[in-house]
Image 1 (cartoon, one colour):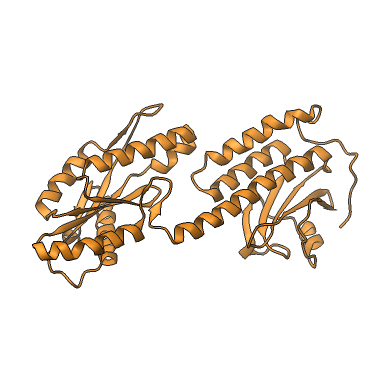
Image 2 (cartoon, one colour):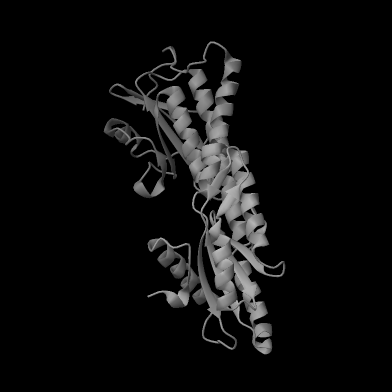
Length: 325
């Protein structure tokens, strides 16, 4: 590896005013926040960075040169000449940037330490050499990316032991399953059925990207409010994924739940955001009869999810599991 020099003019468009880097960073951060998941936010930030610097990028996590298993994001394949420069090197994360070149391509490697994980490496390359302003921008963005990776890993560990979805304040599947197992003995003693409903709202997770971060948050809150109104206050509601929910209704037999499913799907999910949006609602349902000792919560979820898929395949709004072929 060698340093091609620092005197080459930068492609960084705002290099004449050092303070002008702030609007650029703000634009990159807005792209990050507009994404629904951390990995999508990182990809959005690197895409903005690519436009600003007119450079390709390659993000990986490893102590050694990148492999297919360590790639987190790439805008283009790393040129072979640059790959050859990297082979045999061990990356020691520090505050400096490593510059190297091959042919007409000038590259820079930025490393960041990640707590309890392999370090992050970002390789960017373009047809001109890198200025100090370019390097400062790369290091700043990498610091944000490292922070996101650390917090995402911490949140995943916390969520793995939690029974709640922090974004919506609803139960997650583990929490709902525990709630079902707690309620089922009482239902059996009283001879009551129950129904599990899996609700899918396509387009919900796209709102933040299309209409902005706040619109996505407002849409989620309104969706949850509509789902809660569709069931009794004592019924349990959970969030299974970004746009999929589960509702457990004590005492709900097939006939009553069929009427409720028809009412819920008739008008979909109207959202009072800017601009106003109307999302469809699809339901898959399964009823548990009293004293059914062979059907576990996991089985109920599997059958309700299959009923949901069958309904969508047949272009229906809802379907009960027992109707599935």
